[in-house]
Amino acid sequence: MKASTMCEFSKQEFFTGLQALGIDSLGKFRERIPFMRSELKDEQKFGEIYNFAFGWAKEKGQKSLALDTAIGMWQLLFAEKQWPLVDHWCRFLQARHNKAISRDTWPQLLAFARKSFQVVNQERQSESHRTIDPSLSNYDAEGAWPYLIDEFVEYLNENGINSNAQSMTDWNQKR
Image 1 (cartoon, one colour):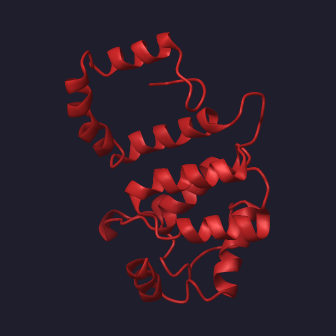
Image 2: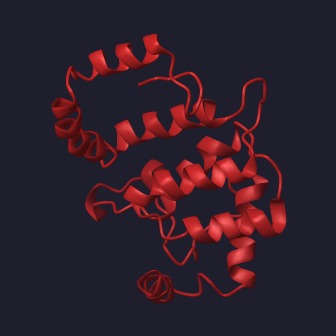
Image 3: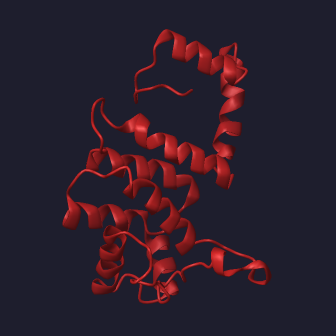
């Protein structure tokens, strides 16, 4: 609906958003919800929503996103994508970072999540689309990742969380 501030909709934003979605009744709103949820499965649409969420969720006048808000947004956004490290990422931030999240970190995490748990057709996989193994065994600490993601991978290694892909699957089943 492109509201400029989280949880605040001007009358104009509300009606313009509903109109853009083709909604003119409560019944049409209910009918549209499954379609809107399904859009999160589309990688491009998810990226658009994800990138929009940063500016939408931060407080007016702030350049960064408060950590507790960022964590809530990640848990909400990645609920549909089922990124298995989202809870570890949030715990890591609370334990080691405990600072607001910068605009730079926000899209870099999405890139990391996509690379680390992307299912790619092996025949079409190229250097530019190379993924990071779920065990993170091929993670390149010398690569172009920001320090916060480097520290996160280090945190996972120190805590034995990513020792193998099966333990990651087992952990997710226990949740």
